[in-house]
Every structure is written in structure tokens, then in C-alpha cells.
Image 1 (spheres, helix red, strand yellow):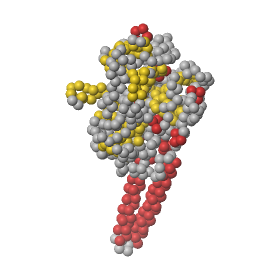
Image 2 (image 1 turned 90 degrees about the vertical axis):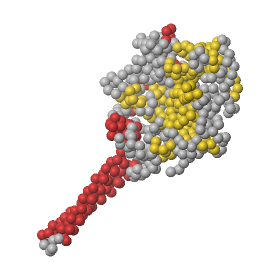
Image 3 (image 1 turned 45 degrees about the horizontal axis):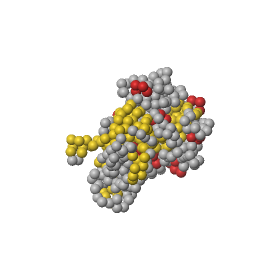
Image 4 (image 1 turned 30 degrees about the horizontal axis):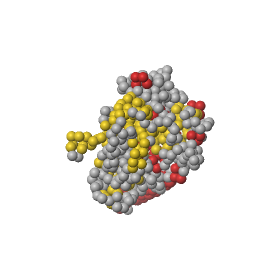
Length: 585
């Protein structure tokens, strides 16, 4: 196990729309529709410009009221002192004594009013805090934790990822909405009239998923006739395709998606249970534009015309997220992406990973075990292989494809632009193909961590981390992206209710023995909810994380944690399992 910790400091003076949305939600009342939050969508620019902190809006208001009342109290004290001095200097003059008495009485009345106002203010703010579950009082102490309502199933619960992402902006009107679960889900709980054929798109089951313009509320939710639902063969990815375009051609529109506790796993058990029993909800903002830009292939692994160890995985990285219905499945039923060798099609499974932006192929041919004793799978040895990524046939309005697609399409339904000329022309000219070779070797080098953000020193947590700081780990090799998930990586937080998900990007770092050579690697970024002030957080990585050659992350090491013990905790080797929190305040 490898674990790093850091301290979220209250000294970082930034604000984001997520904080404003959450605080406003709690201030104006808890309701799962988020309808009250509409007025906050344009505040991000203002917030960034002000340089204000991320404190609860109730705390800010309470502090302002206290400052004003404190100032008035100071004025009242000064008036009392003035009246007392006036009385002392009256020298028995009845008129001056009476004036001093009158000032003292009025100052006393003023002090009573000020103290009453302060008491009422404190009572109201405390009641709001207690009613909305953020704790008692408006204290800015370190025990105050920010929780995004109905969010913790992402990462900590059954949700792996979804598209659009939380609080996404400028989402095209013709987008599909996709949810990826960590376990198999019963399609009948999401698709009306499901009879056992996962290849058929069916109307939405309105009792399980609610999609609506945030400002209009659930009464304006899309109906079953307005949303078609498809599922991937593994019963984990569900695509919700609105028949009418979302939003408006004249103004941006905020949408809310709610996943209810009516959703069931394949075995009939509820998908949302325990602390997550209320379901999950998120928001995004749809722009006034349509997406008419076709997706491209940005990079591939193995690199074209290279010779590779036979246990390497095949990866395809796209310029944008693609529709999982068009880009994932077993080779027995899926042919939009095909790897072929001298003996024909290589059997295996094409998974769509990395926030729907990367394909990863794992063959069915077992060829040994890794250093954890787990089975690894290989491509044909000493063979020349070619991979063909099909573009979809075009519909009546290119670049939109015919549905159901017979090739790869993006979330807006645009067919693949395989030759990257900016125009989608269909499978004959826009399919993407590359070739590489294998030898008979198997590579079993374990991946290691090169660096972390926030940076850490051995034995010390990172300090003064911004409340919305993305957290990332740079590895010394490419990774199996299908293992970059919450089974292998956990974001540890004080309440264990902070949502998180992952995005990986091909990166590189200088070869330690020859800095002129850059070693291909993956940088894994953890996207998460808003951190709270003065709290210890941690990232925990275990041996289920694998390299591109399927070897496990064990011993869990960084390039600077080189001891012989089983675990690395804040870059220090130790035999015992890392615990959270590794440090206390």
C-alpha cells in the first residue's frame, strides 16, 4: 500500500462556484431538486475576482452582523463615558445633570437593543446550521466539513463516473448523458419494457432517473418518450439519449440529474444502500450550441511500427469522450474496434475507461501470473498485429451518425474523424488503423510513483493545499487504465463522504540515467469535492493498480520510498499498513 496525506489550510484565499452552490444550497434549505440554486450559476467569475475565502455564506453574514453590532456597542460605550464625564463636570447644574441622565438612559436602551440583536442573530444562524446539517453554530473552526449533498456515491459508493461531469459548463445541447456503475445493474430498473436484450434501446424508466432543467424543477422532467436508454454488454454503462435537444438556442440552461434508490443491481439488491441510500444527484450547464466536431484519435499504445512484449495492453486515446455503446464490448459481439493477427481476430474485451475518453483491450489468452499471483493475458507472440477503429456510417445531417452506430461516435453522436482533417466522412475514409509487432517476452516491472501533487516530504503531509486543488500521482510507466478506479485508489477524508473520480493523461518524465530520453508514463488526477479547512486528507493506492503490462503496484513504492518494508506511508517505508489519518492536528 502507498499512502500520502496533506493538510487543507484555511489560508488559501480562493473561491469556486462549487463552494457557492453548496453553501447556498445549505443556507436556503435542503431539497434534492437543487431548484433554489439557479441564481448562483453566474457567480464563479465574481467569486474569482473578489479573492474571498471559501467560508460558508452564513458565517460571512454572521461575521458582518457581529462587526456592525460590535461597532455600535463601542459607540454606545463611548456615549456612556461621555455622559458620565458630562455629569461629573455639571457642578450641580440641574440642566446639565438632566442632560447627562437622558444620555445615559438612551445609551442603556441602545446597548440592550444591540445585545438583543446579537442574541437573535446568533440564534437564527445556529438554527439554520443545525437544520441543514452543517453543524451547530457558525464557527469557522477546523471541525466544519463541507459536504456536497447526494454526491458521495461517486467514488465511495456504486458510481465510477458519469458524463457530463459534476458542474460541467458549456455542455453541447445534443449531448447524451452517461452513467458508469462499479457493479452490474439490472437494466429493467432503468429501461422501460426491458425483456433481456441489451442491444435494444428502450424508453427511460421515469421512476429511477429524473432529468430536468434546474430552475423549472422536477415537474418539468423529461418523460420516458423523450429519453432513450441503452446499456453496454457488461450492464455497467447506461446511456440516456434525449430525443429533443437539451436547453435553448438563446440562453444557457442548468440541468439536474437524479438517480433514485429504485435502481437495482443485477441480483435485485438496491444499488444505493447504507449511507448512500438516498441516491445520487449532479448538475451541469448546457450551452446554446450543438457539438458538430467529430472525435479524433489522439494517441495509441503500442506505438505504431514498434515491437513490444506480448503482455502489453492496447489503448486508444480520443480527443473527447465517446459513447460507450459504440466503443466497448467483447469481441464475440462487438466489432467496431478489431485487433487482428496472423490467426485472425484476437479474442478479448474492449473496455471504455478514463472518463469515457480511452479504450483498453485485454485479450482472453492467459499467459502467466504477475508479482501478486494474478493472471495476466497476452497478445499472440512473435506476430504482426493491426488495429482498426471503425468510423460510423453517417446519417442525414453529418457529422452525426446513423443510430444505432456501426462505428465509434462521440457523446453528441458524431462519427469518428479517423484522418483528423476535421470532417467526418464515414467508415471508408475515416476509420483509423495502425500496426505493431510482438515478441515472445513478458515484462513484469512494477509501476512506481515519481511525484505527487500536493508535494510531500518523507514523514510530513503536504501543507496549505487549496480547497479545490486537484490531486495527482505521476507514475514511472504507463498504466492499465481499467484499474485506475476506486478499487485501487481511495481518497480518504474526515467524513469519508467526499466524492471523487479519476482522469488519466499520457505524460512523461526524464530517464534518471539519461535525462535526454523521456519515459512514457501516466499522470492520474483525482477530481473531488471541495476540501474543508484544516483537515487531513489522503490518497491510498494498493496493489490492485496495474501497469500497462498488467503487473501490480507492489511493493507499493515511489522512486524515493525505497525501503524494504511492505508499505509506504507519506514516502516512508514501514511494515504496518498505512492508517488514516496518518497525522493528527
